[in-house]
Image 1: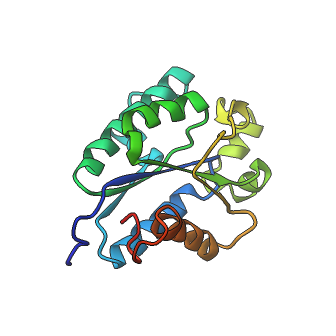
Image 2: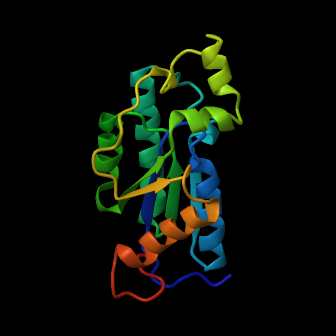
Amino acid sequence: MKLVSNQKGMVIWMLGFSGAGKSTLSNLLEQKLTQENVLAIQLDGDELRKGLNSNLGFSMDDRAENIRRAAETAKIMAAKGIVVICSFITPLQSHREIAKAILADMYYEVFIDCPISVCAERDVKGLYKMAEEKTLKNLTGMGSEFERPSQPDLIISTDKDSLSQCLDQLYTYLTIQKNPGLSKEGLL
């Protein structure tokens, strides 16, 4: 595979409720970028909690540390020219500020906006059902706070648009709208 020359490393930080579509969109974006010969990698909150962050729980302090570790990991990769696609709930503005402070101008915040009722209907992990049954505490949006982002770079509504439309919005933003007048590669 021939990679895009002089590829600019960056971090696409997708945030939102569990079930909003962060991981799905991250996977699709990684595939699309790879097809375009862009070196990209996905960092998923669930995957990092199985390894690097397995010692963390879901208290607000542990959630902040989870984000700090993820941002530091993403920074190392992005500094090497890799497009890093992060999918983390990132519930509080203070958590987003941690990531922004670490990543600086490499950070692009994408809010995957989906009502919690739709996320609960999707409930592929069974988390919302467990929260309703009180067998799971601290689920974001149901027992643990979520603050809507104040100034995300992009908002994608997965309850209103198809996955294909959402991917197109994200890809267009990254390649054209963020750097108007550039070639198809845009930021990449």
